[in-house]
Image 1 (cartoon, helix red, strand yellow):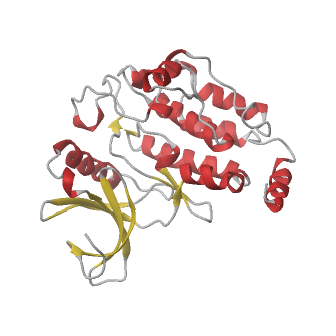
Image 2 (cartoon, helix red, strand yellow):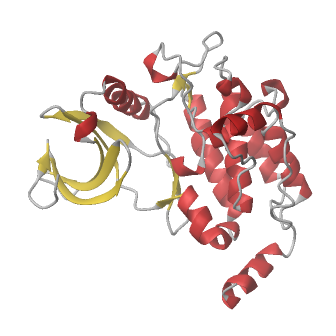
Length: 294
């Protein structure tokens, strides 16, 4: 595909925003209007991969049920000349993984509000009856005004009292998710609950305040084993500006047993509201560090 006068259905392609292993994201204009949108387009080499087409269709179906300022707005699923794609709100921003890597100090200056915004987006998804199942910094967009959007609902699952994790396909026996953020029950392919997303959010928040993952390993299996059985790490050695109270919140979010985590995202929000994420004086130190270029 190329920009210019090339169209996908009613959308004129403007520029490619990014390209991944399975999809490209394009900025586009809806024909006959000035409306700019983002298109998530399946790469042509994957057109015959039914699972990927179904995942894209599922992502659009889930997204259409969501309506919240902290969640990306999905317009719909389209298929033009066998090429499937999702049209969604255009939100020019880095994801939080990029922000942590490139601008951690800038993120830390407003970290309380950013964490709250992430929670609000996930809480809405739970309220609408969905588990995200892939909580990680990559799945939150953040712009220069520190506005947040939760994205990527491709493996989201209906909240259920009896189902085990099967991804979007309803019978997929492989484990879906991202190893660095997966809860023990997700690794074991057991019943998932709101607590599963809270575990992934805990790992995400750990990385957001420290720039480091809670667990690292030399092999994928070793990494999964650490999520299953290694002691829960404290974030304090990774960033001594983090308050002990917030470190304790992270520890509870990442408890091995779902029942020992917070019962809801609203409960996490309530605790963050009562807690300083960083110790007093930390913002001043961060600003001095930024001004000094260190």
